[in-house]
Length: 374
Image 1: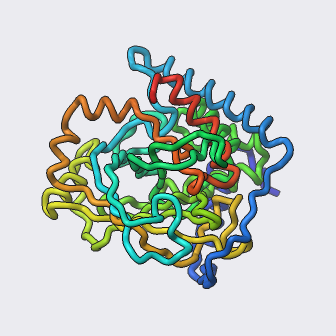
Image 2: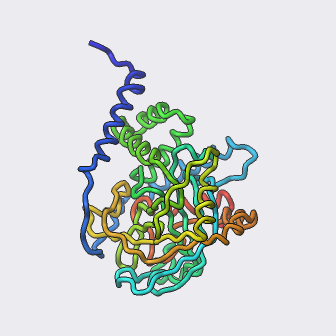
Image 3: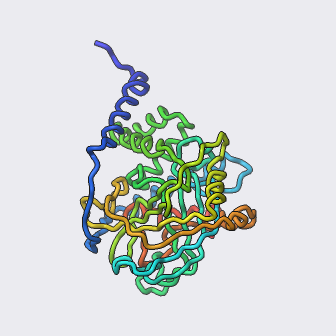
């Protein structure tokens, strides 16, 4: 009988097991098509101990943030995640006329044009080359909104002046909750880029089966090919209110564009985006709503499930070639980098929903405060 040592298990058996699980979950026959009308029967399920658990998670993330900055002496404190911007650039958001009644809430209630700011980024807490796999972020700040704030809301006098939506290049999150994110962040810092060390630390804290699931999800999402910000779709992966309804938001190019040839440069995604913009004169994205229909297939609390409900285009996001001159202005870049893209800074009609978003309510202000952002 052959005795498997721990090293053989971690180096040979485990990778094969993880690859099998990834292939099983992405097998084409395991996809489904969802049909159904938008429903107002959604519900948030808030555990009694959630506030305590979120406090522990925030403490862990705060410690991670401080250790990260202490290791990079001489650099000012940056964002906890999505540290490096690919580009920050002005944009216009134009809400469309004639929308279905269930869409006409918040900033989508009436046709209007809003000045906006877009921040494209790599999700890592450290600066990594674009050639390395990462979560890619598309942050949208819509200016000049008016109404009750999601931070207070419900007619208590608190007003919103901006609306923030945060999207990534996937239709689901890799991790179930903020506690798992904090755990992975802490283990990643110890592992120093070694995936085996990362798994061993996660397994010691979370248990073997949970660690396998977390690693599988991370490898599946972070390892996806990324063709660029001008050729990829994005999604909030966690829901927001839309008046009495609930929805996730998506973003896609109004007209499909072919990817550019990948450049052999450390940070090629910036030049790739600028090249698309210069060639086309402007980039136009469809901002879309994907509505809750039922808890079984469009769950409010589970961000690891991809929703399959239909998308409804509610607005056009336009970035012009002329905006590149502003994007290259150091003062503008510094101004945007001192902004907080906090998804809770918005209207009560678009209040973030679900556990992950509730955890973000305290995480984002703390991160902004540590770096002096507004």
